[in-house]
Length: 375
Image (tube, rainbow, N blue to C red; front, side, top):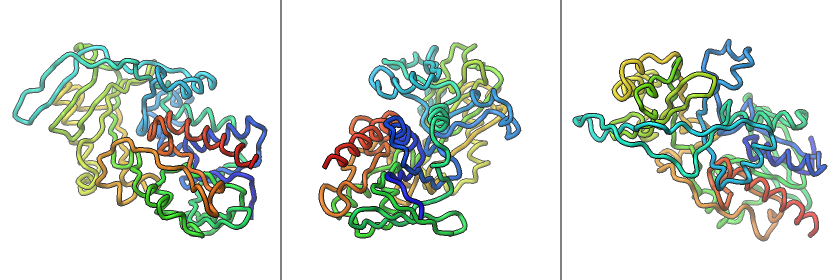
C-alpha cells in the first residue's frame, strides 16, 4: 500500500495546480491519482492534423480546445497571474466583423453587427492544454498515477484509505492523511463508495451540483485560412436551426484557421445519432452560414462530454448546462471533517465550473491544509 500525506483524486487543472502549490511550499509527500490514461481532465486541446503530427513540435501550439477555451484576465486575476508566471502566450478572441444569425429554417441568414466582450475573452496559444502541460512539466512525475479510478474511500482514526481500479479491474490501495477531490462533486458521490457514509446533507448537495461541460458537445472545423474574415465576418454565429447553436472563430495565431461550435441539440438526442452524421450536419450548417468553402474542412474534431464517463453521469444528460452554485467542500463535523476536501472547479465560490474556478478551489484547499495542520 503506497502512502502519502495528501492523495489528490483527479489530474485536471485543479489537481495539477494543487500539487504544484504543495511542491512550492516544500510539501512533496503527495500523490495524484487519475482515472484517465492522460492528465488534463476537462481541458482537452487536440492538434489540427492527424496523429502523425504529434511528432511535430509545432503541433503543440496548433491545437484546438474541445473543453474550455476562454478566460478573462480583467476579473479572473489569479488565473491571469498563473498564466504569466508559467510564461504562457495569450491572445484575444477574434471578434472583429459581423456575426450571422439563423432564426428559423424558412428565414434567410441575417448578418448583423457582432458582439465584443468587455473585458475581452482571452485564449492561450496551444489551447488551454498549454496550461496543464506547463503545470505537468513542473511536477514530480513519479507521484502521478494515471489509469487508476478511485472507487472506495475509508476514513479511519487518523488516515484515509483509497482503493483504485485499472481498466482490467485490478485493485490498488493507497493511504493518506487527507484526500482531496479534484473532480466534479456529482461524479465523486456516484463513483466512490465512502465508509463511513458522507453526511446526508453533504452528499445530497454534491449530488445536486451540476457538472460543467457534462451535457455539452463541441465540433471544430479546421481550414488553411480564415476565409470568413475576408468577407468581413467575425466567425461568430447564433442558430436556432442547428445542429450548432453557438459558433466562434477558433483560429490559432501562426497556425491553422478554424471555426468551432457548441451543439444546440440536447445530449439525449445526440446519443441517437452516429458521430459521422453529426459531423456531416455540422459541415452543412457551416456552408449554409459561411459559404461553400466551409463545406470541406481540412480536418475535424469532435467531443461529446455527455458520454465521457470521467465527466458525466446519467443525471447530467438532461441538464441545462449552466454553471453551478458551489456546495460545501467538506463535512463540518464527523469522521470526514478535515479528512476529505473538494478542490475541483465546481467547489469554487467565485467561478464555479470555470478554469479560474479550478485555480481558486485548489488554492483554498491548500490553505485549508495549513489550518488543519495547526488544529
